[in-house]
Image (cartoon, rainbow, N blue to C red):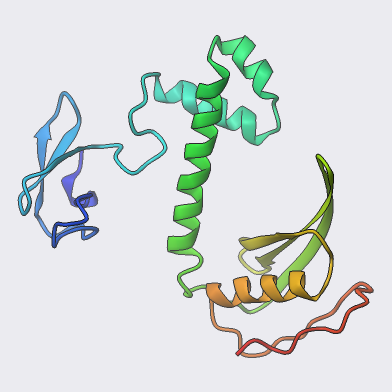
Length: 190
């Protein structure tokens, strides 16, 4: 347990979100809890993560999430590990929410060096129709910048993706090449 890597989770505390300043101390080794010296609140080591309030071993959760990421059906995981389908769905939802928060904090903070960005769109079949997924990555680092889902492959899809790229870092120049998209391309975002 390292209190220097933790921060207070109480949004009313003036030390909320600030770590490494010495205001977080270990409250209980056995229960893996910390305490903020500023507001007096305690919190668990896993507060704010996908592992918060788990009643199963962390290794099992990691295995289940890995299987889901590689496309294993939920029903197969339920049968193999004797879990409830709602539990597996909750783990997947919580892990996805944490990944989204980390991506927003690290990638969409505007500090990514965007030297060359590659974007493409996929036609995806869903229940009740077809959707288009446009996604982008920074070529040099292979960092995924984000994606946009729309019903139509049109100007709004491309514009929304360009705005998402702009949130990740500064763009000095844009050279936009298409593979035959028939709509008029949007102007450069400012």
